[in-house]
Amino acid sequence: MTIADRPESRQKNWDTGYELTKDERRFIMNHVYVAIAALTIGSLFGPLQAFQHSGVDFYPYIEPIIKSYYQGLTLHGVLNALVWTTFFIVGFTNLTTIKGLGRPLSHPHINRLGFWVMVVGLVMTAIPILLDEATVLYTFYAPLKANWAFYLGLTLVVVGSWIEGWGFFLTFRAWRKENPGVRSPFIALGGVVNAAMWQIATLGVAASILTMLLPWSLGITDATDVELSRTYFWFTGHPLVYFWLLPAYVSWYGMLPKQVGGKLFSDSLARLAFWMFLIVSVPVGFHHQFTDPGVPETWKYIHALLTYSVFFPSMLTAFTVIASLEYGARKRGGTGLVGWIRALPWDDPSVTAQLLAAILFMFGGIGGLTNASYNLNLVIHNTAWVPGHFHLTVATAVTLSFIGITYWMIPHLTGKKLWKPKVALFQAWTWFVGMIIFSNAMHVLGLLGAPRRTPLGDAPYVPEEWSGHLLRTSIGGAILLVSVLIYGWVMYKTARGPKVDPEDVPAIPIAESLRDPQLTPVWLDRFKPWLIAAGVLIVVAYGPQLWDQITGMQLNAPGWTPW
Ligand code: HAS
Ligand code: CU
Image 1 (cartoon, helix red, strand yellow):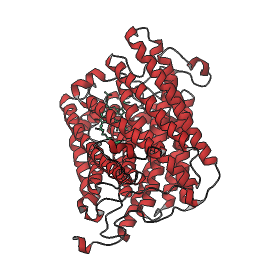
Image 2 (cartoon, rainbow, N blue to C red):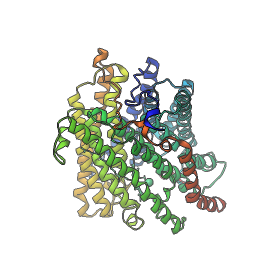
Image 3 (cartoon, helix red, strand yellow):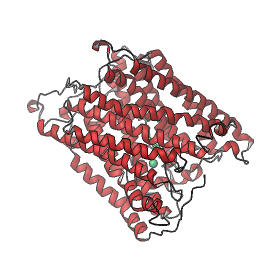
């Protein structure tokens, strides 16, 4: 298609002018309420663990409710890594789909059903955890064994998110029919690609829970196969981290440029990054199993190589997002090679939170590459380095970005004003500073050999050289505790505040693309080739190993509940 015959519709600016209805706003808010509640409660346990490391143990004081460090750690991981993220992401994808496409959901009852299935699943998961019947940490590795309700609840959360995904796919298809030949709006496409990747990725935990863990916890089988359940878990567990990351990328590419007065530098590169995540997110799971004796080295090596390919879309992102920010900053009068950074709107808490999140992601990403290196992984695996890594990635790049998004989204959805933006700004900075202290200490501790998932305050083998770093984890944790409490408070006060003039309510920021998106090649706007490529790559990278492990399955681990 040449420029002359491209459809004229809404090509310069994706903002279709569609206003979300009251029902749509309320529906999205319901997701976000659950998400924020999970984050604030789940985060309370983080500092408890960090304090424990430096010998200040609060667990005995809360023993009637929480029995052990491990029960607290399970709550922390499940609420923060699984519940906060999933509920926020699904709610946010409703928003990007509806607003991006400029039309209502085609089958809103499907999405409603999906949401309620997720809520029922959440309650089913929470009860056994609170009863100390599912102290298995967020990875629920066999042979640790939980009450069946925990596994069934998690399954329902996943199934609910699938159902909502189907609602997004149907809406996207309806939009395509109504707009033949038009490139799909980027924020909508990004959310739908992520939902598609999630459906493929979660086949692993679905297989693990339905064929192994659930029958085992119900007593139908009396033992399980540890290696196979780990392989299934990481089939899902690695792409899970990109399921968390991609909504932040939707915002960094498709919204943040607008917030800083710039434009999306390249619509094509943005799409290419998302398609690359669709094809390479799954076939890399063995980089979590480099030390597993049951996986042959060749396959670990292949997954290590594929892991490096998943590094490229993040480099594309770093380049494109920074270019988009620079464009905005220069329009605001910024000058100099790096001096333009000062011209970004650092007084806007939503922008600042996302910029700080992205800055720490550079370090989290470098650490990720260290992890992915087969030989270096042997040094850091199962050490405090790994939680150091994922607090820069999921707990900062993702979480602080989502926090930044809520700083415009909650006011937009509730028709209120953000309560005390300066306090919100302070919150973003405290998260940044607290996390630098905490994660740096964790990385160093890991290099010194400190194990992860261990109440180090009780460990008799802690050498003197760890103690300063253990103290720093507590200091970082204390700052983060303050930060998360401020966040919960700002959200609460915002939601409880008075309604304001619609003029004063922030709009949904949608970045224009620098170049007419209609010039983006068609192959960057088609699902089929990428879905086929994803399927082929998964079969090649996982097929033989899955075949071997399933046919050689040995149900020999009876399962235990040590805590
Ligand atoms: Fe990871 C373990 C490898 C990314 C999360 N990872 C984990 C675990 C979690 C996690 C939760 O290969 C622990 C799981 C467990 O409990 O056992 N990870 C990687 C690699 C990447 C990576 C290669 N991880 C993530 C992301 C996560 C996440 C993203 C969550 C959201 N990870 C591993 C490996 C392990 C692992 C091994 C197993 C370790 C073991 O032994 O157990 C890559 O995708 C990273 C690429 C990213 C970059 C950064 C690009 C930078 C950007 C920012 C640009 C800046 C801007 C700001 C725009 C190269 C895009 C500009 C600002 C201005 C002011 C101008
Ligand atoms: Cu991974």
